[in-house]
Length: 344
Image (cartoon, rainbow, N blue to C red):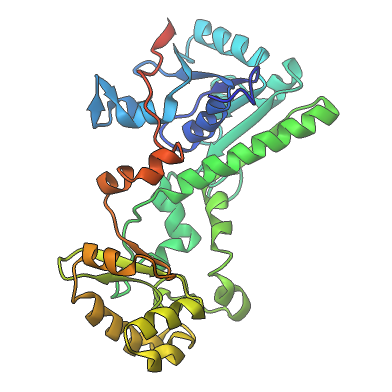
């Protein structure tokens, strides 16, 4: 692993996805991350599938960290956490608002003892405000941010997303916020408190689709959006073997190249029309065309053509691609470090 953050001391009190993803990125760059788990451990330890007796979920999000178990309801557990905080550069916690204070820990006291500490508090909707105490995981942030309304089936029914985007957005946003706070500390000598919400991390990701809502007061609909299925050249098509392919580039040059190769240059004006109903005849033609061959036959047909196209792969196929290993995106690691101490 890279040593860009070597010497940085991080205390991680978070579980599941957002916080562990944040601290994983720090650990991968050489930070010394101590993951503090409650008695019984991070619940992700019990989530399958398992390999060599370990949860794949837990290992994948917590590799490179030192795990300790502390009961923060006991004086001994509290004292040990204060010891870790006093020497830490960063603390990450994912409790609901108010929990850390009820346990006897606050940013004000921590900053009094360790002025350079950067404290990142991750929650669903932020530490204050009308939603602060509302319980939710990723899907709740999707729903209340508006994103779920455009993550829909053809009949307009919202469907459960395949990616925990608000969890991962919070991890990425939190990593950036922590690093910015550390840069600020280098100038001032003082740390900072970061109020990070999954909701607030996800909402900016709609910058390209929420214009209708902001400008005209109209909710965007996926079937009229360029990037959400309303454009024939940014859509999913079924193949003869009941697999799928996508066209993933709306530029006129891609549309012209494909339609000319298919002998239908007369349809190019439709590809240049605004997304929505005008694209329905073109989508119908492309659906019929793609249904005439298998997915892999289309992969062969597109070879050497400068057209934004891709087959829809499952995870087994995706991870087996040479491009994944060549880019270093799949890392084979040993077992995660086990608990180094257990204080009750």
